[in-house]
Image (cartoon, rainbow, N blue to C red; front, top):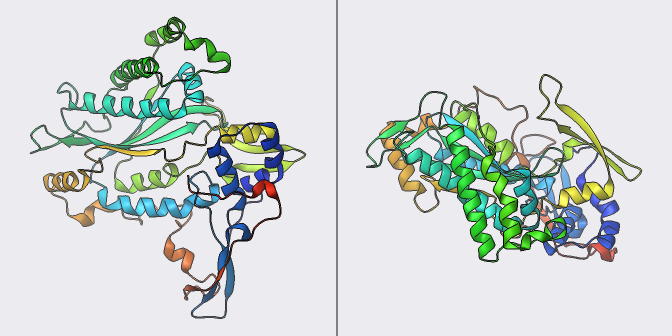
Length: 401
């Protein structure tokens, strides 16, 4: 099985205890460190498997299943994408990204749960309002949004990736209204409504006492100072942009696999770990006409700090569905859309032959397949109890937060 030369777990295992001694961590951050360090080790136990067709035997240690762990996302992503296949429609799909100015990102740094919840609400209201407007689309749309809080350099950069079918249901529900080819909604109109809604909801959260301010933002606890801080943001353009449409369900599934279960940094991006420093690869998207690929070297302490600022509060949903795809009405509304589009189910599913993936996706079947003979299935024959590590720094139970 492929294993990167360097892993996040190695860095946390080596430098995590010292970082814990010198920094105050939240309970969520502590659980994430524990989970990643113990993932697929004897600390979590495991099982012995035998092939039912050949003599091959292997020991497999249990995964932590934490959503921040780079090693635990492949299978979770495959299961999630498989569940989405039956929800695809034979239309163009658009990728719209909503981000906030740096001044808002600073507030979000200390108020992750409150500000990210506002980001979801303001984004959903913006897309639904403009799409329903007869001057734009005049339809009820459906979409899902994925929260990312990081940039490629691991700095704090909260933004939402939205995947939207190119059209929606008419107000009476009797017609499917398609958007213009290669064009969904005006990003300038989206940006300005998003700016207004977000600032209104942020001010409401302030009045309700839902925001906390520390360090360089401590002065914002005063209402007058908070109002002056937000005032300039009403006159600048907020970044909302739409990428070229996917074209159809095939490309959408490729996107889902890349973005929905992504963590702040994958093990494949780690280039070197030595002498208390970490070197990793990143892309500079601001570079124009030049090579975007860059390398960055940070001290281990700073690297761990940057990684941990992207730990989400326990139970916070980073993938959410809206409109036609909302959980309560999704099944019935999608069935209605398919009837209006007059497309049989077979045509809604992707044809993998058109766009073969660079690497075969991981599935439960591929995990169970015997790597020796390629024909048999690995069967569990013995359970291995969790091993209590001798190092007291890691004696905490990991969970899937």
